[in-house]
Image (tube, rainbow over all chains, first blue to last red; front, top):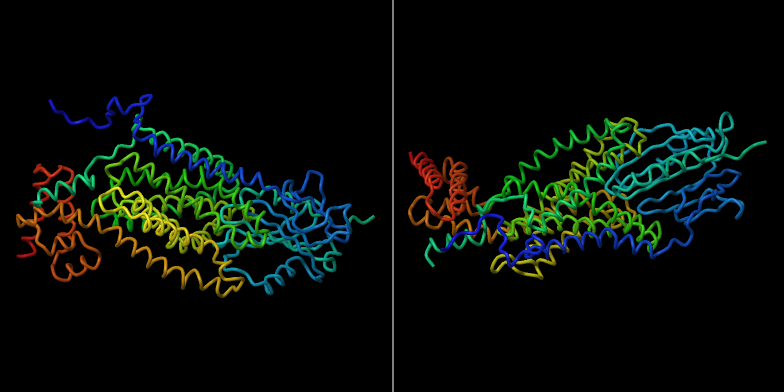
Length: 205
Length: 381
């Protein structure tokens, strides 16, 4: 008697632990490729060390006595730690798809005017700019932050004057530029926020 | 071979009309799919869960606006899901893999690690220019295409031609695109520290909505058509060189879009012009070339399916050309025949019913046939 096979019926010779052995190959292929993509690149990343990673307790010297606390485990590509020299506001920190770049400048005027000036002179990739917002550091510096989003990912520019109150107008300016590859900003947002809050001007006696 | 033999062969080869069943506990592919989807869902909930408080407005508006953005895409893809069309359940399976498993299980952790590798190897400037384009085309195109492999395992008889790969790939890519868009809404809201969340969402809708025309849906449709040419699941459809080249073209498009800044070598004018005036026309031309090339096998099946109906006079030669043809064939038919649109759809229904009945004359086939005859009589009247 010839009967048609019911839907979902697996012939006994094709069964393995109750599963259809004929579909094991694609299932294992997907599992292996998926795991290689996820853990293979993480393993490769672990094999290639940063040559100058930041450690807990590190403090960046931004010049003129100003400091900032870098997030731990980031590559300090440019910049000086407190105790290693007089310091400089030119700092580059890198992790994953995110880069934090600090640049100092002499500028008379407010942080807002400084950011306006930066926007006027910098050539930028096409992106949509978000609303400007205030940002206050733990030391009481009031800066302005502006974000942008474009095909290259998310970015954030923050401008500070390295003194609070009446002295702010004549104090040196600091620009913090954060660039993250598409979809990467969220992973570093807390560390970036903590870094911005840690920016401290010279402590005056 | 008689027309009836050709019809039965087309039904057998295309698998059209075979019911799709997602729940297959005996199938290891089903469990891997569930694992990928589950792992992706857990990451997604961890990712978005805490955001519903501080960034609730951004996320909610993102979900609503991109939900609306999805509608025209679904209509467009439904229009292209022709010839031996794929069932809705299978396409939903593809969409969910693309939306949940591919980005949250695979791309998110894999991209972070590979981007850091590029930062270490190329330095921050090199990685800024080239990192994204050297990362996403690998992790994301492969992650999405794994969904096609799983769907072949879930419905081996239904997924046969390069056109099947093209359509399934488009749905996987659409899922990835829309879920990633919501992720971008969240990222942008975070980057603005939660200020003007609705404005932030509208910004992302404007950027990503426009860029979406040549984004994951396009990349995956091309890539998955290439995968099907490599696999060659129907006689004469296997062409490894064409398949690999097609996959590489999709990956190159993804690379060029992500690294348009690097390719413009710092010139902001070139960075603006390159994606929209150069890449978009090239990518759309390539998309339609792949679509036409991939459709050849399916068009042949449609002709074979309706062959006996042509012999019996139910379908005439012009209608057969239109229902099995490309857009230009249907357009020409619409110019020639009043009510052509309905006739083409009715002939498509007839082919579908014949396939579902495995070539037998069932009441549904007879009704579909009667519908074609009724419409043709109206045209003649």
